[in-house]
Image (cartoon, rainbow, N blue to C red; front, side, top):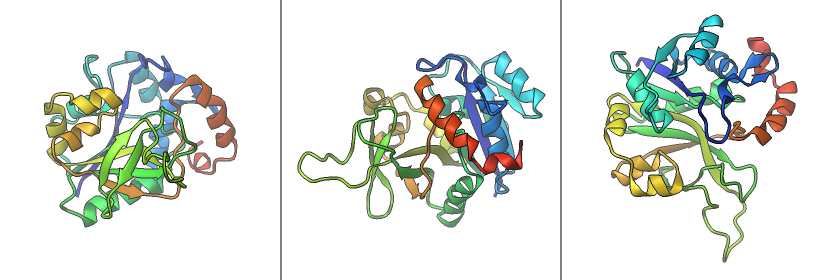
Amino acid sequence: MKIIGLIPARMASSRFPGKPLVEIEGLPMIVHVLKRAALCRDLDSIFVATDSKEISRVVKSYGGAVIMTSAKHRTGTDRIAEAIRGIKYDVAINIQGDEILLRPGDISRLIQTMRKDRSAKFATLVCKARHSGDITDCKVVLDRDDNILYMSREDIPSDARVKVETLLKLYCIIAFRKGYLEKFASWKQTPLEKIEYIEYLRILENGYKMKGVVIDDRSISVDRPEDLPVVKKLMKNDTVKLRYL
């Protein structure tokens, strides 16, 4: 199987403009993500997909490969669907550009799931949420076969009647079987996707299953400027960075 990693990136984030080029531990955030993903031996190649010439210049200066895309895309998944045109692959991995603390082994776990379960068309990493009430986290609930039942920025399941010990959330590294990334991009935005502001609900609303691969790591992405101090503190003691800095 040929496995391709794609990292969507744009400068015009509504919550954190210019986020991909914010410097952490001496490197732009997008470069951290690229170099950490490159440590995953199960990926055959990795590309940054962007509409920004500035991001392109920075990534290339660190030896990364870039595919330029349209600036009209509403979601990162739509962006990488354009980027992958003409590239031969069996599984495409969408690696969000703000998952700066990603571990290469986590990507491998997702890839192993796609290799073992050939019926899986879509799969995502899932981990414990840091705390309740955070609408930047996309919470998920799973069925007994670890397929995603629903996703929301609200806390699910509800603790209105029973105390919920653990909330799960998306760890935004997503796998697409060949042809299904393109299929995703061909669908119009769906009603629940628009309400929840979670693009992957488009998969569920079109009647497909999405496998959830639960891991022990807690994903801490940089969604807002106030996440930066937390991530910078964690990066001080991070061991993965020692493999590429």
